[in-house]
Length: 185
Image (tube, rainbow, N blue to C red; front, side, top):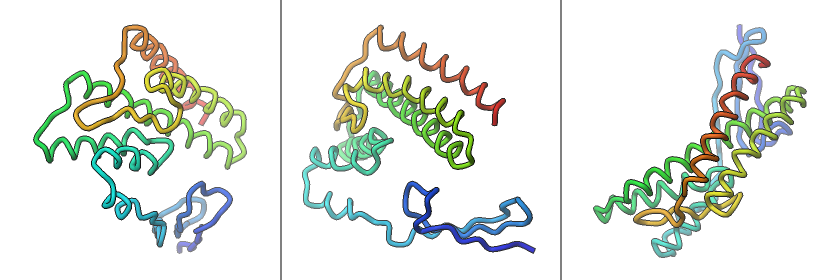
């Protein structure tokens, strides 16, 4: 027999408002029902009153951690409407930024989870390693939050050999740390 455990919409562990109902048997979660409710900020309505290019800046504010992803999807959608395609190098730069955001996000949330279960040492390690990714994002975009790198038709910044070298260093470092985290968790 499962036990119903409601969590949220406000809970100290939750970093965003969400309402979850967990069904637990012993110590195993057997089912979960999300209910996001009225967590809506009206971004779509705001976008109706702005130009194509103003929306690029609006959409990067959907999430501070993954602003390039939201902005990039909008840029790609706009390019598709106009039957245009970003140059190949711009597509590579977009993909690089999205992958760095993904790494940054995973390290952030792994750290948050470790903190919540009381494993603060691993929390500090993940956030330290996250800094290497954030430094690289800043090197590429000039910013740590709200990168403003995407535009309709391409990207606003180029990358050079030094950045590619640093990217490989950071990728190898994070991969080695991932092995460490896997052993610890």
